[in-house]
Length: 213
Image (cartoon, rainbow, N blue to C red; front, side, top):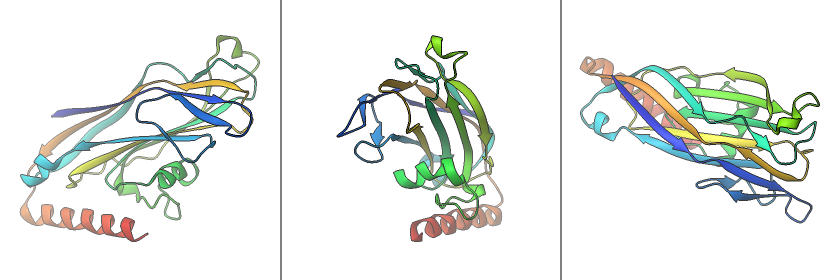
């Protein structure tokens, strides 16, 4: 059994008046979907090339995201909102595709291009601030939805994406999403040659399908 881990730095974004509404104040590895936009993306990957070269299959036992704190803001105001998306998948995504996960996840008609079986872990959470709790400066969790499959894979990488979108009506000031650690617990096994080749073929077909889209 192997425990794999990857970390994301915290994001500190500032909202101000025009011309650029949103800017990154601090956040190693984070990038904006576009100048002034309120969506931010960070990515990394688990390198499994050594296992694929030995013709091994990765069977997932569990996946999780560890976090330090709830999202927070120095401009604590009722109505502030944030969406946080965590994805671990077997196909690479563009920033636009990763950000689309908050709308359509890995459903067949979704804009991400991801199939359910390609999504090892998928989670979309909605946070906001209300009058009862905003004095602490932290966002409250409103919804938590998971869409991962934990399907075994013969792929040589697991791609990881963390997407944050702040609400369009958020107050001017600093808004933060704290650091996180992605965890995968998996067992590496050698399948029968036919099964392994079929799984490898399916991984390749899904990858090609995603690239064509």
